[in-house]
Length: 181
Figure 1 (tube, rainbow, N blue to C red):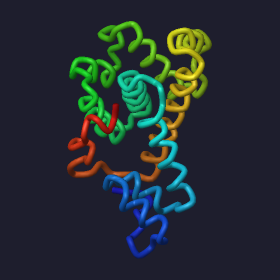
Figure 2 (cartoon, rainbow, N blue to C red):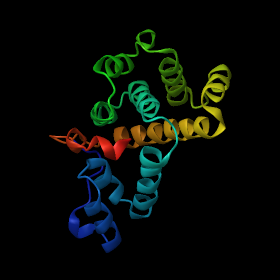
Figure 3 (cartoon, helix red, strand yellow):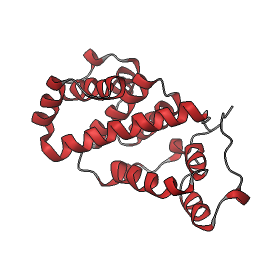
């Protein structure tokens, strides 16, 4: 049950209504629509992370799943397990990240999972992890990884505090894999 109610359609201004209608029917979108000034920027940043960054989609999803685990965000975990499958990740990798079993991941994936968990848990990733991520990914993709981890950590806190509920059938279960690569 939500702690802060989702806005009714009649509560939305025209711009918010158009944004909500253009996006998948996600409860997190509805929640952000309750703060109209945040809806567009949140959408833009989320889409930039998911659709326009140079960070490898597999590593991005590993980071998001690691953040979901570290923050206890079942909502993010369910949504991004489906996206992970759509981009071709194996169930073994998805399960390993979701369960915190980094030893079952390849070296790059394990590093990204540890880095993401550190950002989510400690706010500032350990210096050695940051240096290793920079060496692995280069400046641009390492920065994109930081932004991804920080964004999903913030979203997890919003989900938890507002009580955003998981959809009965998450829209991410029926996504087109080409949309996420």
